[in-house]
Amino acid sequence: MNTRPRQKVLIVDDEPDIRELLEITLGRMKLETFNARNVGEAQSLLKRETFDLCLTDMQLPDGTGLELVQHIQQRHPRVQVAMITAYDSLENAISVLKAGAFDFLTKPVDLTRLRELVTSALLVPARGVGIDRRLLGDSLPMRNLRKHITKLAGSHATVYISGESGSGKELVARLIHDQSPRANQPFIAINCAAIPSELLESEFFGHRKGSFSGAIEDKPGLFQTAHGGTLLLDEVADLPLSMQVKLLRAIQEKSVRCVGGQQEVAVDVRILCATHKDLGTEVAAGRFRHDLYYRLNVIELRVPPLRERRDDIEMLASHILKRLAADTGQPAARLHPLALDALKSYRFPGNVRELENMLERAHTLCENKQIEAGDLRLAEGNCGAEGGVPDLTRIDNLEAYLENIERQLLLQALEETRWNRTAAAQRLNLSFRSMRYRLKKFGLD
Image (cartoon, rainbow, N blue to C red; front, side, top):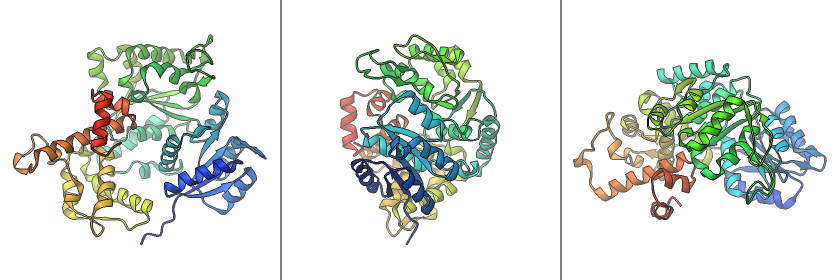
């Protein structure tokens, strides 16, 4: 049996109710938690235990969370830190991120957002971990990709990261940042497809209290929060034309004006952008501004799809199964040779993300810890190296076959929009009611 210990999280807060809430929530995520009421207790625990993540309040009886972040960065650099604070101000957001915090939350704590933050923080390796251990694969396309990332990291140029959904574009962007001179400054990723169009300007540039209905206090924009660091515009092709004009101006002028504000604020950010769409095609169709395209596409870096690096599938599968075993505390499932052959001949429209989801399902449902080809539930239309029209002789049940395709498309849309159901429905041109019905039908709600 796998005896690898659970990942450890240090909770630092002087309010017992908050500590209990976080402890229960993280316990349900199968994480081991330790509590501290102040900076001194936290520092003592950090000397005795090896933690993966620290969640700390901003205001503590004997100091501040910011001081604790700085202490951890100096003494325990492999520990990710996130701030939980009741003071949602521009100064706090920028200070904790610049000090090295992974992210921050505001009170009252949104548990869904908390779980997302914790999951993301625990997936990010320490900066000291080499690029070859974070971007797995020994194929020629991956060796070339790592070489280009290292070169681009030293540049200040805007990089357009192209590639299919699930291929690892955000990981590539983070690696560029972590290898760059801006590594100690914030890395902020914006999913442009997941933000309602009427909120985009406020999210990008911030707003002043009272500038519109619901603006009950000043809020910094993501450009200001990323000041000194790197800003990733993920799914940038989905920005409406009206917002593209404002984004172009911010990039050109290197300054922003918040909604309701009167003055320009200078910002120093390196822009990286990513999309699964072809920006050149979007420009030709009139859906993307040609001047913004040339601002963003200074250097293009293409992330290869998984089907172009089939030699990496065995290594990736082994890594994923070991990680799943560590998460569950159970022995890793084995891939039957025929299952591995099936994976190598599959086209993977969802790329590495699809491989992860597929193996997680198979790891859970397989018998005797051995994954057979049938446990993978591969979509027939994507089997075979060349794909094409599915072989009708291999389809036993048309309804089940079509439902499998529909479920895969729903999952892809949800993952592209980070499980924002409204944005995913728009991506698939479905009404929200129709989307909700399908999510319930396939158990994805």
